[in-house]
Amino acid sequence: MIRLIDITQEDIDNGVPSDCNRCAIALALKREYKTDDVEVSVPDDYVSLCIGKNELNIRYENDVLNFIDCYDYKGDEDDYYHPPPKPFTLEVVEWKN
Image 1 (cartoon, rainbow, N blue to C red):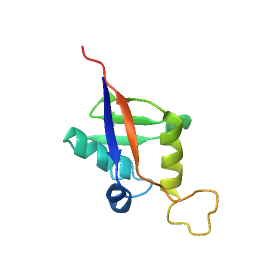
Image 2 (cartoon, rainbow, N blue to C red):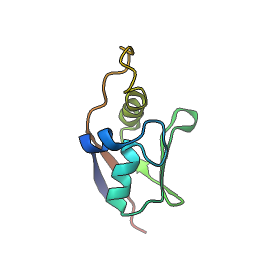
Image 3 (cartoon, rainbow, N blue to C red):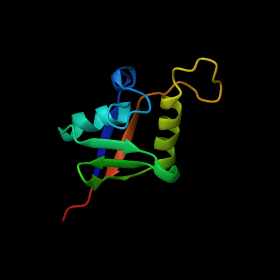
Image 4 (cartoon, rainbow, N blue to C red):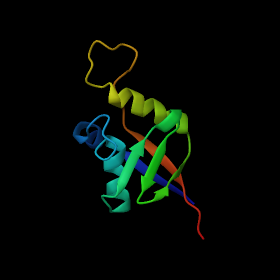
């Protein structure tokens, strides 16, 4: 089953860049999974999205990495390499046990 999670403009505006618990993706995950126990990180150039102790299996990881890269630099107006982040839909693959 695929769960679609919208990262909205409101998430982008209200999130905190480089904060694994309050960034735009974390806000969307909190809303979708109805929990505050989320963590968004990029260890060793891959995306790790966790709900509690469970890591989510995401599709299109490169798109998520690009969003995070642009989001974390969104306040730097002199940075021409990172365009402003735009809302997108995160695809999570969920498996039933």
